[in-house]
Image (tube, rainbow, N blue to C red; front, side, top):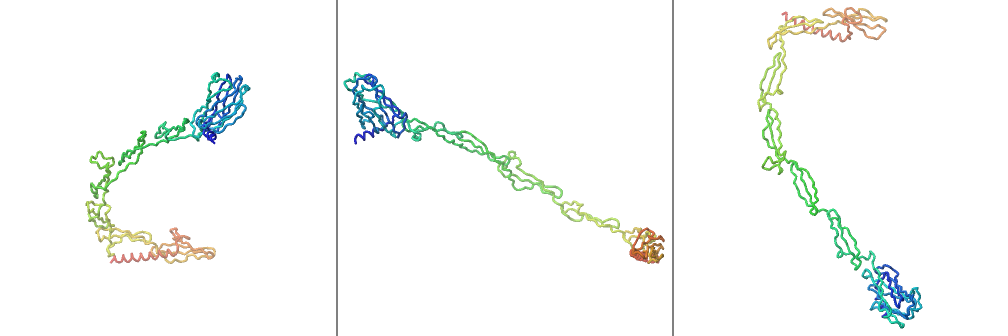
Length: 471
């Protein structure tokens, strides 16, 4: 049981490649090789021992101790050729293996004989780096004095590394190798905390971003506000421009009242701070607005003048403005001229010329309003046609003729009577001319009858007036 404990404690070292040569008795050699050139914590490594004696040195026996470095833990060993190596004992306390040869080496040839293997575990907490395995307490026996054999102890090295997953990265073993800026990334370099590793890695430090401090220039009525942002770390800056406030005007103040004839004026001032400073020249442009007050309308007042209408002149009334007294033409009122007034007494109306059927007459009288003599035209009376009489009877093939005679002047006109075989109406003519009146017009009979009645009525009025004037 004690041997087993010794074996487990010694299996902590990892050996990558070990070559140890021990020259004894003028040519005997002991060589050690490993199955791996590089090992990691947790691996297993096997060493193979081989002996050769090409010079056939007279060495009857050989014994030595294999010293294992810390970190390589003994696991097991195997004797491959018990003829030459009869025993191998592991000392856990001393972490070495004592090997004894029990036969002469003289029969060995130049070829190396594999005589033993040692298998070790590589400890997980091994210190990384190059490890050295060596031989100690080498002795020869079989009638040969050790001091007579030229011997130089040999050594062999193995490199112990670990995998990327086995690196230990922590802040204690790191430092900033490039400071991060506002816009540029920095770097932090880590060194593996495992003893002897020395591996490094870098990590990016994110850019800090700008730390802007703002200074404000306030907006005024006409000038926009400006915000200036400056980074407290790197000095980078930029500006943002806002909008001008625009004027904010107060109430209107009347400077001059408007009248009927003259416009007034008024003003209003901006109430913002930039436009209320005591020095008006320092106020911003446009701080005061002015505008005209429109002329107020005239107010219709009393009558300014009045002219009565006459027979020939219209009447005129004018009005003046109640505020300014100006006579306003738009308010002028007119009355139409009265026209002359005939006397109601017809005897005061003198007939200058009698009106006939076709010609106008003329009368004169003294206007009862203005006293001036006036001459007035009397319209023509028009013909007064009788009922007419047939002057040619119609036949089945020919039209007849009806003749009408003016009862005032004797003028005649004719009207065609349709032939008995036709349904057409008759046409009239004047002065015995068949088919049309003397004027050349075709006039319906009813129209002529109406004109006749009007003519008779007019004739009656004229004759009555004449009789009254003759009295």
